Length: 264
Image (cartoon, rainbow, N blue to C red; front, side, top):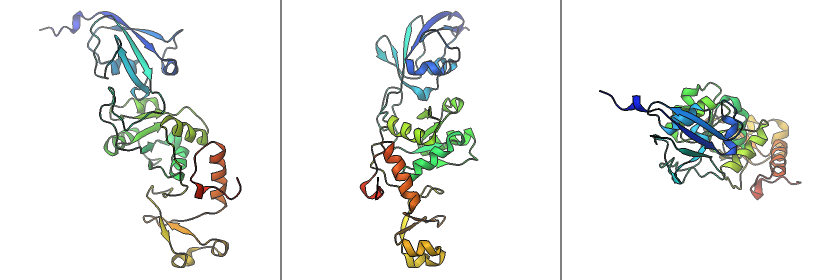
């Protein structure tokens, strides 16, 4: 018996928004790409076969109406593929992603590892390990409902990855402001609210309890300390704090008033 797929021989035209053209495998002269269809294929599969990860797509439009990733073209037509437009709200349901995330949390892969530390520095829950495989990142993104940040397009094409961002910037601080802007993270942010190693909230600790672990100058000049309940690493507002705060403020990052350095 025939399932009808043998009779499918037609072309569709994909019209990509300008921001997605950079992902196309064969760089077109315009943002229009023609695709031969000879079997039943979801629009998600078709778009990704051209090089665009589904995570970069914000809307798919057919005949003026939004369709989801499961849509199957059944004849010649023009399909608009629109990029995810910032500020991109992962907590709001859309046609493409009807099951939003309850909150913004990230998982970062090894090729933008320094970004993970900066996100933790400003207090944003971020999973990271340089030992994670792509499969592990995708699995954790699915089970923990986390947004994947990476430069790996293949990782972003994995079905388990619902939300993700292909990081454009090179410098880690630029990557941070890119993420803040794209996801509309307003702050104000608090420095060193979570452990940079364990990604868990820090707890206030009395100086007398950790006095034996402090260096002489730290004992003399600092009185407010925090500790990680997991690894017991100690944090305090030293010169490194002011240096990072100044850098972030210069980039337009909204810092909590108490986190601002004495001289900005």
